[in-house]
Image (cartoon, rainbow, N blue to C red; front, side):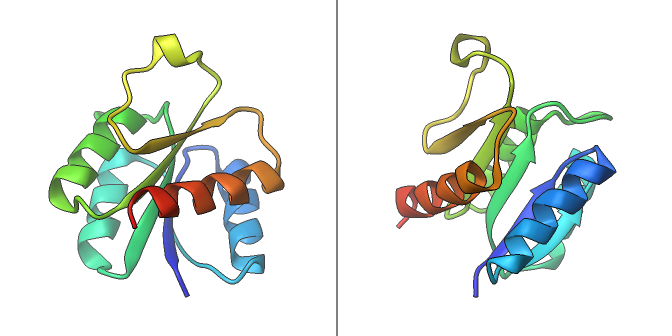
Length: 119
């Protein structure tokens, strides 16, 4: 069973995404900010995939978070959700972009794609 770290500052969106992933059989760890996500990642070696919003409160936005997370754990799969255009984002290689707004089917497909990119 894969463990996914969901990083989303909107509690209702986070609840919805986590519930959908749990319904599909994933274990889920949650964080509302980038610094919380790095703490959760350090505390849980089982996390193999991060799903993060691009815009997060506090010091780390989603892109900075995934850059640091990949520096610490290069084997991580990453999905980043954004309503911005691809030209507006500077994403590292190997990151799967999930366009907002998204449905659960698109979320699950992005998770599968991201996992394939790191295997």
